[in-house]
Image (tube, rainbow, N blue to C red; front, side, top):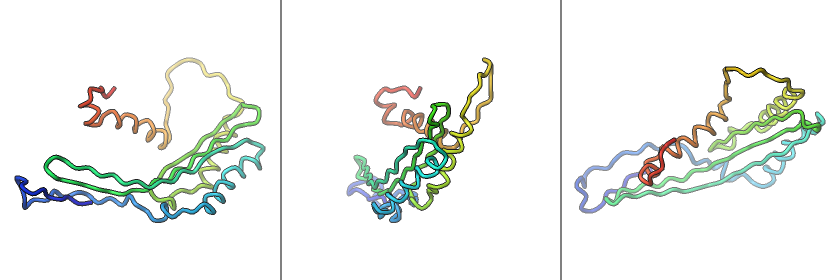
Length: 168
């Protein structure tokens, strides 16, 4: 990440510093089809062994984003993204469990653990019972908070505000 000064800029000798986060990972970019296939086969194995149904996906991508302003300041950054998601269902339709995560670095994703979490949620959610109306404290898991908050952040952007979209 860098700032490029524009000729004739009011501050020719000044370059605005930018943070340089580590958001590109060769381990993600080079993830081959053989490894993905092996991970996908392991995605459904625990559920099948428990007599449940399972489905999921792995998504891997590489991107580059560039921005520039009218004063010639520019910024470019490449980044990678890996997502792993699995849903497990009871064959009778009485239980369901989901788990998923995304990281820039594929090696941070523990696919076996995520599949086990989805299976555990499914098994524990079978045979639900009625709950009386009332106020209940609900604790969301980190991925749920991230998914909800990303929608809020999308609408809180400067561009959306300039386009006339209110944040809420």
